[in-house]
Length: 115
Image: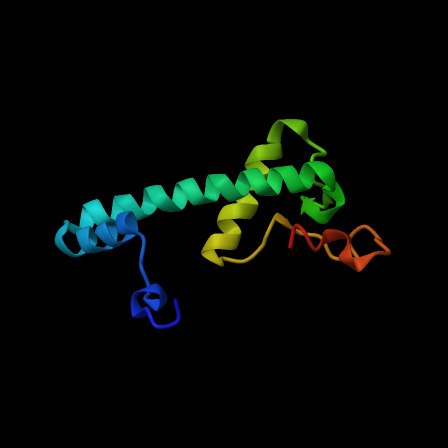
């Protein structure tokens, strides 16, 4: 296998390569809305991860000064806000990951899964 050069070549994903190739020929609006759709789906996926992490350890996310899940009606929207804020690098405002000083946590590694 060491003598076979083809085993060491980078082989990109065919759907990804086709999508990238399509972006060079498509209109700006088609590319923009496809990127927007992909961004929205990825934000939804990570919002699910944040919601799951917040469910198991609500002290690791702060929402309006309270632990995550204090308002059960806004759990997923809070997780989605955390997700898109993280992806856009806008900066954290009302929803952010907790630090050890927020709720006087003694174990700093407790929230490493959320961060």
